[in-house]
Image 1 (cartoon, rainbow, N blue to C red):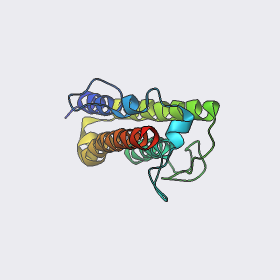
Image 2 (image 1 turned 60 degrees about the vertical axis):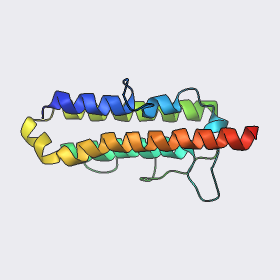
Image 3 (image 1 turned 180 degrees about the vertical axis):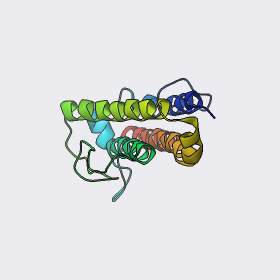
Image 4 (image 1 turned 45 degrees about the horizontal axis):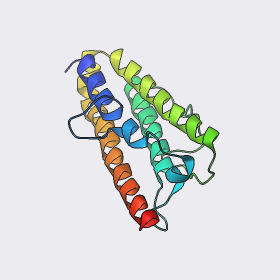
Amino acid sequence: MTPDYFVRLLDEAYEKSAWHGANLRGSLRGLTPQEALWRPGHGRHNTWELALHCAYWKYAVRRRLTGEKRGSFPRKGSDWFYADEPSDKLWRDDLRLLSQQHRALRAAVASTSAQRLREMARIVHGAAFHDIYHAGQIQLIKKLQARMVNG
């Protein structure tokens, strides 16, 4: 498997047309900050938190692939980030962060040797599967939210 194969796989899961339905970026498209903050239940993650979680794991996979030291993620913390402030600017900034982390991961994959990608294939595949999993989760949250709000 070549770097190009993995870049195409990551792009399909994040933003390119896919046979399986909405990719991650598509599942987030058009959401308002208020919609992104809606929680499906007490103690459940909202869509905004899922978007940040995906951004973090793109960063984590890139770090594992390149050997980069921990600590350079733009948000304080790791894995899960609490979101509860309905701000247009913060929502746009966090969507931009997700996109930036995707671009950084795909650039790292594109510049990685085929041998290293063979060694790391499981986690690079996992990054794509992770995006698809959470895209589906977001689609379900949106349907539940519409049902709860509209009756």
